Image 1 (tube, helix red, strand yellow):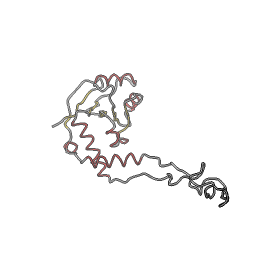
Image 2: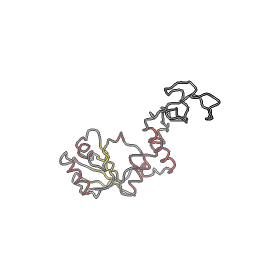
Image 3: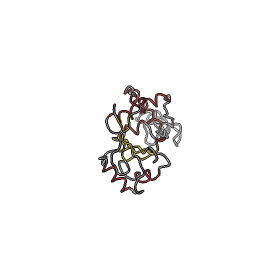
Image 4: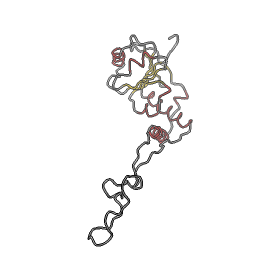
Length: 201
């Protein structure tokens, strides 16, 4: 049975934790993970892109030239799409890209990607408060854990601001609370680090 590594605030390994049975059995199909990830990415789109049709652009509706006798092509008003400054054909309009996914599907997909990190020894637990609230101290901790230079998803409780403030300025570290985390965040990371209070800490 795979275990999750536990480290103190100096990066020294301690006793490992067994992966909960429910998490260890999470092995949903890649299609489900893909569907949930695509839905979350779509939901983050603003959907504010907009273009004007020929009926919305400014300009006269007068025919640009007479129908016959000029030797030139037949044309209507100057707002037609093939004229410079004319309307756009089938252009984007503001829309909502949200895709509804059932809660249980999101939970299964999230458990699957977290289990994948755990099975490949890419899930780390930090126990204990950081020595100082400084980016340098957190960078040194990552160096000790051999995580420097990798994309790290660091998770902490909203009350553990010393960790969140110390890690948010590092370029390859995404620091956030557990409630903010999604399947996409885990997939975009090489390693997942979580601050968990064990025992009396």
